[in-house]
Image (cartoon, rainbow over all chains, first blue to last red; front, side, top):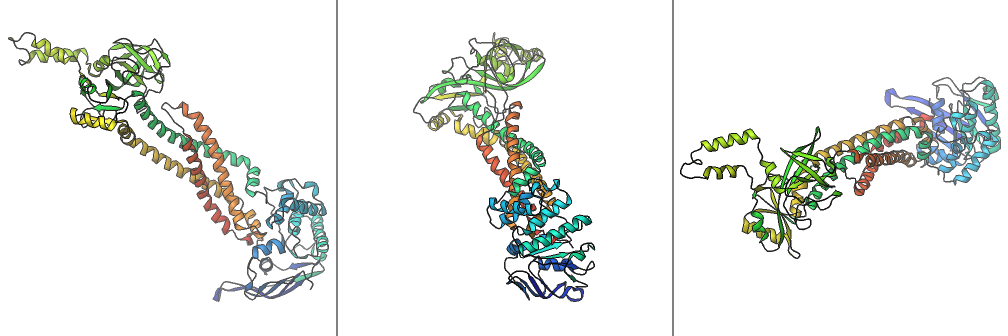
Length: 223
Length: 401
């Protein structure tokens, strides 16, 4: 694996203790190369969301090792100090619902992340507009999220996930609220963005119509 | 970095403005309550200022003439006038009563002022806004404009009518009742004047008393009856000092040699503020505390509700790496903005509403400044509950599952 991408080895996550303990993840191994979009599929309760939360540095794995590019994030109980900064700078998120900030316009929804990282407002907005142009929603740059269609909102959410040029993007059911045509468009956009920015993209999905679009698919069953 | 709080306020400005308006009315009431207290204190000070006295000589061991009844013989002022350091001394009477104004009654303080001249005799209204001072010994009155009389009106006090010859302003009792100045003799009579039946019955009793109706002492009964129908008492003697004499020294001298109670300006102010309106002040303080608590509860509830509405957005913000302090600042800034909107509305409301109150409401800048910072403090404290809740939000909530 080159300097980007994500690698997990022997990842485990246990909830609870003693007799009530539940192993949500059991020795999960995964490698996603830069520029690659992979699908992560599995039935409900199989541990997809738990894996996504571990990958997103939202919850700590019980054991295992996770590497983002050359940087080790978790290593059997050890973790990087500032997970918040890690999420801001190294991981992009695209959710099932776009979850745009309703009181910020489209440009500022996207520009917020670089602003949080300390980038000047003007430069952050320039980056945002460039991405919105790449995603063909630049004409809605001054609109509020409530004024956008579902597809436009999801594109803006993708732009937000990409704006800090993270090495990895985690997409949780990004096509669920969309019809087939728009779902395929979103996946196509993710593929283009992955190639363009050398980003590793993990898409958790149940959506049968987009599964054939992935070159590699990870199945997860009972952790 | 953009202001998240500012953007949220602009996005939901209607909610903020209406909530701020409601809060502002509450703050307006709070400012007016403080103004009522200040008005009471100012009324008390105006009463002392307008009397033009340096010392108040009253009945021994009383807090008269404003806080307790006080009675002195009306010739006492002559001996006080002879004391070293005394420039002027004048009798005065105070009687709080309802005076008739057409078909209605007006609560007033009737002040009996000694004959003399403005500037020379303490107790006179120091300035007029219309008409002239009292120049006749009977049945003329100078009235505070707040009583609602006009020049030429006639005021019924007891059984006599008084012609309004002058109007003055800000001449009020410590309770805020407008003053009616009448000649001293008329005021003395008004204080003790009985109805005709009572006078007739009193005369019959005196005539029936052998101690006063002696056959061998001609003229005794007439003298006794005459003494019973006149009043030779006043409530206080107002004293003005010669330049260079310390009030405390002259007061000590009068206490020692005349065996009377004497109050200096500072002592009289202490009686008015510390005793006469102390209970009212406590009452108002309680209201202020309650209003502050209610304001805090409203701000806390509103900010809590607004934050609850944004739980998902807060989870997203935390997931994408927003610092806790940025989220806390957003909530606190919104609470402060609500407080500022509320204070501006409250200040405007209080300013326009104050003159409509029947008693004097004094809004002073220091109260407004203190109120502003109190509102900000309340808003900061009220936002802590919402901040605590926001900081507890798990970023994982944004992912679901």
